[in-house]
Image 1 (tube, helix red, strand yellow):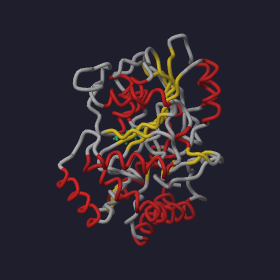
Image 2 (image 1 turned 30 degrees about the vertical axis):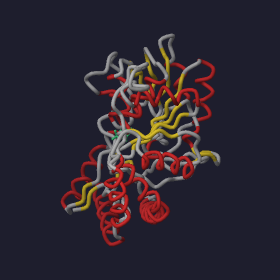
Image 3 (image 1 turned 90 degrees about the vertical axis):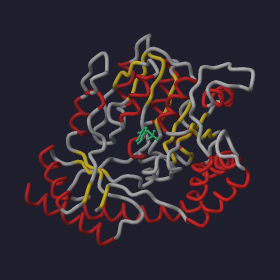
Length: 361
Ligand SMILES: Cc1ncc(COP(=O)(O)O)c(C=O)c1O
C-alpha cells in the first residue's frame, strides 16, 4: 500500500542513546534538557530568534492567540487544515474568511483590506503546502490597520523568503511537527515569536499559566512537549539534509513528468520550495474522482488535501461562501511524497495519472 505520506524514522541507535539518557536522568517532560537543546538547535538551523516547543501545531496556534490577547474577528483562509479555523473558534474568535488566489492557493492578500472591520484583531494566513504568502503585502495591511499577524506555518519548515526564513515575518508563526510533516517530533509543534517581550508570557501559557510554585499569572493550557518527542526531533534534525535531498528528487520527477498536462500550485518567486507536498489541480471534480479511484484500485492513496473548504464547516457563524476555495477543494489531490517512495512506485503513480487523464480528456 502506498499512502500519501509515510513517517520518516531516523537512526534507531541514535534514538536509543537519547532514550538511555532520559532513563538515566529521569527527566521526561516539563521543559527538560532535550527540549531546551532542540529549541536551541532549531533556532540555529532555521535562522530564527526564538522558538518555543509545544505539544502540537494546534496548541501552538492557541497559545499564539492567547499571547497576543486576540478578541473579536480574525481574518483567515478557508483553504487549510481544519485546525487553523477550529483553533480560532475554540478560543472565542470568529473566523472571517478571505478567499484564496486560485494559482498560489494562499489567501488573496489583495482582498484582505475589504474584510477588515472595527472588530478585527488579527490576520491568520497559512503558507499553503509551504508556499510563502505575500508576506510583504500582509505586513503592510497589518501595520496600517494595527492588526496582529499569526502565520500558520505548519507546512513551512525550511522556507526562505528573500533570503530570510519566512518564519521571521508576522508577530508569531506556528509550526506543526506531526509525524506526517517534513520535520517531525512524533507529535509536536512550535511558536516562533518575533517580539522578545512576549516570550515569558508564552512560557507561562504553555504550562497552565504557571510562573512558579506559588504564582499563576495567566490563564494557560497544558501544551508541553516531552523529552521522547524532543529526542526524535534531535535525531531527525541531523538527517534533514538527506531527507530534503530525497524529497527534492521525487518532487522534481513528478513536476517534470506532469507539468505539461496538469495545473500545479504557482510558487512565490521570492521563496524556495521545501518539497513537502505535491498537489495537483485537476480540471474538475469528476477528473479528480476518476484519478483517485484509479490510484486506489492500484492500492495507492493520494489525499484530498484540503477538503472540505473550511467555509462549509457547520459551526461557522456568520455563514460565508468562498468560491475559489470551494472550487479548488473539489478538484485537488496530493500525490504520495516521502523519502522512502521508490522510483518504480513513483513512475507507476505518474503512469496511472497520465493514462487516466488521456481517457477522461
Ligand atoms: C495547516 C495546518 N495547520 C495546523 C495543523 C495542526 O497541526 P497538529 O496536527 O500538529 O496539531 C496542521 C496539521 O496537519 C496543518 O496542516
